[in-house]
Length: 130
Image (cartoon, rainbow, N blue to C red):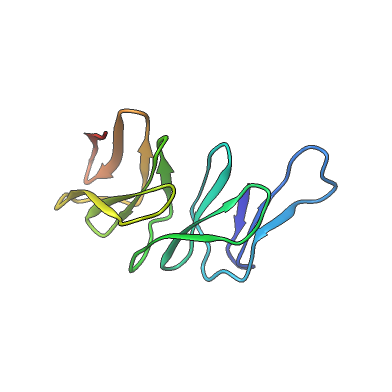
């Protein structure tokens, strides 16, 4: 699964397909991507969305003035960085939740089943999540 930012599409390919399948199109500034067992999660200029791996209509999960070039997830949430804050939203959608604030952050983020990790100025920060 991958994005083609210039074309504004999210694509997928699996064995048995002759060519990649377009999962979502006509997107503005599509960028970050993460994949779980059933969905592809991706960002556009101002939206965090998901689409089924088989394709279909993209679903809006959250909006932000901008998204970092990386997103990650645990079993229930998708995480991202904006400005000096770390946010998350349920994979099914809902209200976004601020996880950390007022710490210098870079655009990268990583998540495992117990912690959220992100880059600060000359340091890697982590926070336990539920």
